[in-house]
Image 1 (cartoon, rainbow, N blue to C red):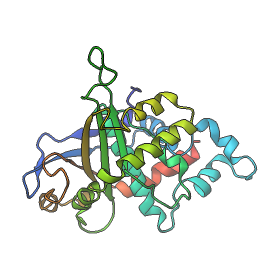
Image 2 (cartoon, helix red, strand yellow):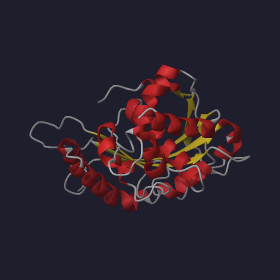
Image 3 (cartoon, one colour):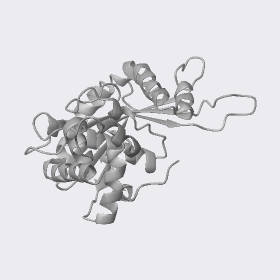
Image 4 (tube, rainbow, N blue to C red):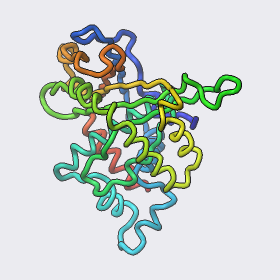
Length: 274
């Protein structure tokens, strides 16, 4: 597993979870970011390479007449004009929640999906986040039934005046992951092959036939809020009653201050420091 980037230490689990209307625990994660220039510089590189690897930017911008920053701002990153800010918020939340599951929860989380967007101002399709855990198989076996496939649905709200029931929306959309899981696995494997990542492709292949190679399915729904729109009582009204795994789906809420300001500043830094 790669070394945890410094900004992941800003993700801190609250000691006491909340409870939904039907009694399911909701893990609260505080995002306590600060204006630390050294950390922000490293984070900007980590963030930028979800969209384009630094070693490929010059080749990709060749012929455009654009600088690295101009190339990223004009052709890669979601724009500042609608619907760009909403896409920025969604991408940002998905990437940061991926950091949480990889560097706090110990999953292997592929990071290539944003590099293959058709256009900058669109959200990626399929499961928002896939995570994998591979265990040592028993003697004489090729796989462990305790291997884990994680599917996470992520919703963000960084603006507005009140909570638009983002956690409930994430729970609702998580239900679709039962159906689109195989499609998301196939797309992730295809991207791994395009990037000559044979190890990741083989890891994904292990999870493509649950009937012949059983494993554990873990589903999660996460909502990421700006603190000013977070409403604890609204989170408590959420329910998993209509989810395919009502007693097993993991629920999380993330919150941090001035999130949309942070989102725009990180995209700007990621472009300007390329």
